Length: 200
Image (cartoon, rainbow, N blue to C red; front, side, top):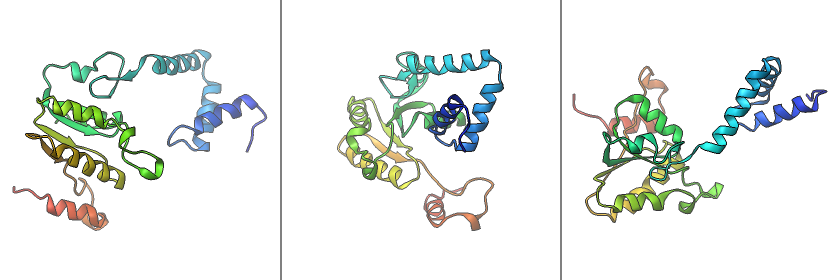
């Protein structure tokens, strides 16, 4: 359904370009913005413009930052001998929320996906290899997503790192999520949970 206002329709169209937003959600947001005080809409627009102007990739890890290097890379309390490789900056946030990891990160900005035209050249793999070759890294944790693309990326990186002596390459463990039932777990998840079992 098209609205009589071309401006409203333009906002809805732009909102639907955002990931996870369908037309109905975009309509709700557009009407909310229309009904909100003008100052709210201006603050949102200004925040988006500043985000685009001031946030960039960290020159060390590739995470998003307003300062160089990012706060994580600048933190002297972190163990820079361990690098956790993730696909996207959102993955850094997810791992940081656990409070369990105190090492460094490397953000690939994607995963291998030949069908989408994403090969090794499109990822920040060269930068990772240079960091590891620097001689101070003892472990690289591959924390790519448990998808076909994530698995292929992890295997590709593991092969690249095998040529560098003294570096341990690990993969994050995966298994049955807390609060779920075994009967609802898929075959691959259960197989990984069984093979990755630990003594208690």
